[in-house]
Image (cartoon, rainbow, N blue to C red; front, top):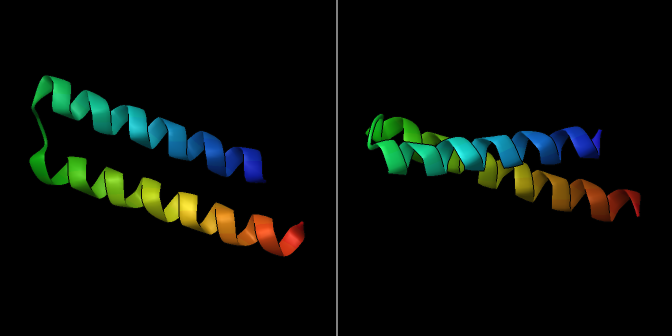
Length: 51
């Protein structure tokens, strides 16, 4: 499950970076960044509880 979350976070960050490179979807870029950060924080919290 944790590998899936990290995979989603990586994909979101890649799409976020591509959004800056192509310069499209201004609001979408920030939404993707926020989703990636939420995924990272969730993963850190769940990882500490399990470990």
